[in-house]
View: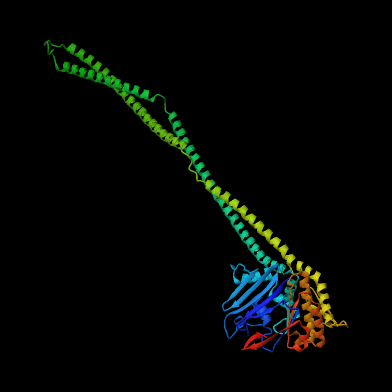
Length: 553
């Protein structure tokens, strides 16, 4: 319960620098009177401004400051709730907004909007709209419940039943669900992107592996080609006879022997030629001067010719053998050269083979790409987990949203209280001598039946009848608030209610209701009918204008 205790205001509307203080918990009933413009209804604006930063009437913020003084506008209200004493101070020129708990100002680190939200949701547990439905009934700037839009009616009822939290939860849930859907959407995109990256990385690794395989294949082919060349050269080498070097040496010796033999034969031939010339030229021996006989000369020449012929045959044979030897020698020499060339090539290819065997195949490094792929896979798992979590969150939010629909939990609770609400409304209508059957459905649409079962709506009735309905709803909401302990309060303000549409009988019936209100209710009646109501009130507060400023007598 909120127990309002005291209201003080200065430089507020028509009130000047001398503050006006009103004890909100002094009397069970208080009559507030005064002529027009003296500031009777200012109490409503002051309370509303202090609690909700907006006046009861449609007055701009700047217009709340007393136009004469032009500054120092302050309103203070004190109340008890939840076992603590609270004081709210709000001001304009300079701007002030302070909330005190048990004499200590609470933290003001947050901005003004959050501070106000904290006041309404955590301390008052009451908003501006609901406050006016259970605390105020008046003819000026007040919109009765029955004139509210359907959703505004619902807000009031939800506040009364303390189920407004479900609406807040719905709003929060909507935001969170939007965030979860965005999270899921982004996770989907991230998942697809990661899959594409992994696929690309796999293709990249496959390409690198193919490059390495090609390198290995090329390396192996190079070894095989080199070995084939060596084997082919060795095969060519095997075609040559063995011992060519020995054959060459033998042939060289034969050549030398033939050269020696040729020299011998040439010398012998020269001697024979000399001998033949001697006998041909000389008739006597030059040494002994003995005459050489014709027979001897003929015999000697014949013998020389025979020897010369044999020698010439030997020379010719030697030449033939020599030529053949030289030819064979040259052939063997060529073969040895060819073999040397083959061996040189074999050596070259063998050296190449040795280098190939000893060197490593030059492969592209795939360890780093493989590690990157593993990391990508781990990231994919994380993204998948995020997506699952996001989708689960969306699912849970959808389930919760279904429960928080107007047709969900809130409607079930409202359905439970509707019979009690309708019963209370009809009870107060009867007390006010208005005998109709009033019914609100779960959409807060009214059905009003007369004694003859004719159906009406609120708009069908006279202003006096509408006032009786408004009063009945006000008292019903206060009773419901007390039952739920949601927005229960001691304060009740009726602004010119008795002056407008109630006849004398209605006034008497209303006074009956006020007397039946629970103990601790402090009712303030603003009226122009002091002669009718003063005797029925516990106290009177009279407003006057003093030096053009509102004051209390």
